[in-house]
Image (cartoon, rainbow, N blue to C red):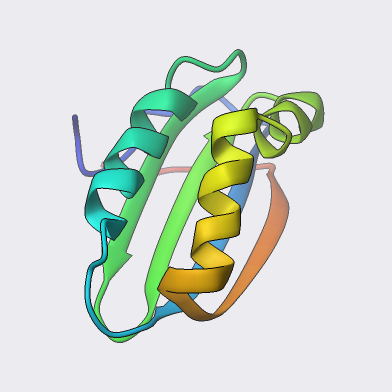
Amino acid sequence: MSLIANTPKPPYYAVIFTSHRTDGDQGYQQMAEKMVALAATQPGFLGVESAREDVGITVSYWADLESIKNWKANAEHLQAQKQGRSQWYSSFKTRIAKVERDYGM
């Protein structure tokens, strides 16, 4: 998988998940990989980019708001969210934005 998502021509949507982790892994990396693989099978998924230092930022790209809503309600994703709140994150924020323009090289 490329480090930079190969997104289509806008418009599309970005879900920006910013987090601060608790100490230790406790299965976090395995679950993160599982969620990326699961998201990739969801209708409307366009790609994902992630980076972690002191603050983790994961941006997933989606075709439309309905696709994001369906991903948020996915049963396995709901279980991962529950674990995240109780075990892996000391704080987090989710933002949803419409991408109207992109460019690069």
